[in-house]
Image 1 (cartoon, rainbow, N blue to C red):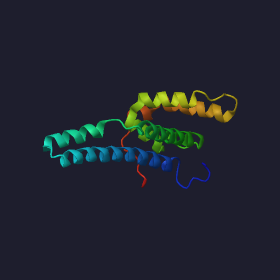
Image 2 (image 1 turned 135 degrees about the vertical axis):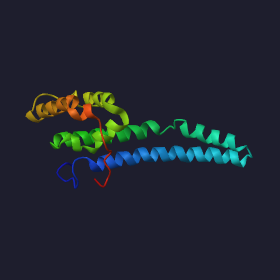
Image 3 (image 1 turned 90 degrees about the vertical axis):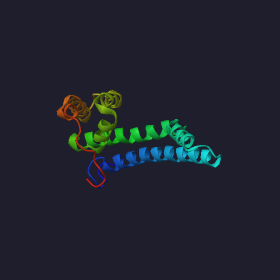
Length: 153
């Protein structure tokens, strides 16, 4: 997968994860507009339609957890692609997205779960452990993220 990758690192995975999350948001908007429209058809006042629309938009849908899990899995896979591809993690689109949405604390939890189970049997694995350890204590996490990468970058 890494060798046939047409772009650098995890850009495609990051873009797909963003699109899944955007689709989830759009689904919530559709449900909200449908609820507001239903109240409009029933002849309810505008304030009730707006309230119903906002309430319906914020109610968790049955597919929310699955979509979020799929997007998070793609982001973690993308970070792994960058780590094993020996790409600079400052250029990792998936890492930037996780930092922007969840911040440093959540990223550390995810990486510990993801890379915590790696065996120390091979040199590549040991290199991965050092890379993750450096990343968790490095300036990228301490300085914050200045921009969110796009499919054009």
